[in-house]
Image (tube, rainbow, N blue to C red; front, side, top):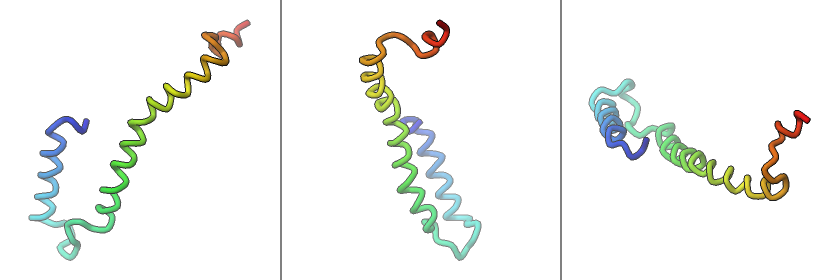
Length: 77
């Protein structure tokens, strides 16, 4: 998603339109909420990107303890 150049084109267009035609003329372009989002959105994206690594590392002790047996298959017996 972040590799696609259209994301940046659309983001720049939205910021430009907000600069030229603000919804609230008394509000700054980079409000407190937008600055907060600029910090937390990348943090959340990094966290979501690390989930597959976490699950891969979590599977190592799982397969070391239980082997190839799945819990669902062992419940059928």
